[in-house]
Image (cartoon, rainbow, N blue to C red; front, side, top):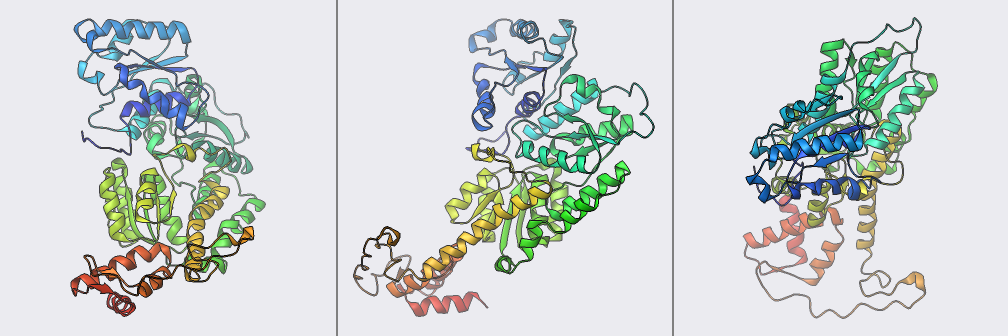
Length: 513
């Protein structure tokens, strides 16, 4: 276990909470000390859910450790059942309670409740949140799914399950809405969506579908694998993020369902707004922009692919904190000629971003803060998330509309960078200098203050002459920091006390070789 200020994932019981909170008529009894109830705030304050998670905590305190904590857990289970009357329960321990070794599963079985009680073994000191969500959903499917009661009627419409969306997931709600619409346009019925919105009774019915659509492998890969092995259900492999991946996803679903792709849907895929904008004259400004991508494996791999193949960016960094999917990320990184960064240390990620010197960062909320410190534009593409990642508007990452959202979200920071560059070029004009009054308010523009001198006293690092500083401002802001660092390094290596305009040009020529 590592002491850190920030972490990409919580402990595995938070992953279990994401599954339980997403579902209906399922209750989670968590053997945990009083302080571990903090996780409720993730759902009520960040996702802004109108209800508390369906979780009962034993909330034992230090004085309880000398008494019977096992009895405390059994009482909590019994009272939770009497109060909430769920269709099923899951039971487990938090990282702190794991040390007590009270065996929540065995204690719950001893109560002989008239509902399924599924024990969770979530090793908090070896695994993390996404693994906890994956394992919890798998155990629910393994414990509840049953054989199909009767064969499908001849000629019935194909139907599928959608697996993976949870509470506190990055844009899961909006992705689900988008993908559900695409499937219905293909003539495919939605049988069960799980975990989000499903009840335990719905998990029982999962094998009745013809195939499964897996949207988030970090949550649903184990459950989908079990359904394939146990019930022979096929599962999709394409994640529909980006225009081209969405087209491949639709073709894959059509093949599994045995249906044709409607002509209007095929036309929309070919003529989508994101694809058209990416080929437009305005978008040529984006070609070759250096981008660093980091997030969960699903979103990081997809974002790098969209950036490189659909927007013409150069991927200079790709990484993930999802160690379970490290092999997939490494394979993707090799296709861009780079080495993948597999790390859950945000300081290591920050150092990698600084070293890569990108012009755009696509990452998590962690990378947003890092990019802000480095003066780089950034778009959030993955959990961990903050409140602004649960917008009131429809904002998917998947499907046709998701491709449009990606284009807007990623491109606008760079376009604003171009505007900032143009403002910088004209900063010397009376209307734009730092002391000017707002011209649109009708006030007279103030004249720039007189400069104290052309050069500042020598120092370490080298001081900047006024004309060199003005020339530096004409460089686009998203590469200005790099130009400043390179020039100061050039001056330092040559023991130059002042950076003049000539020094700036000499440094540019030196580092352009």
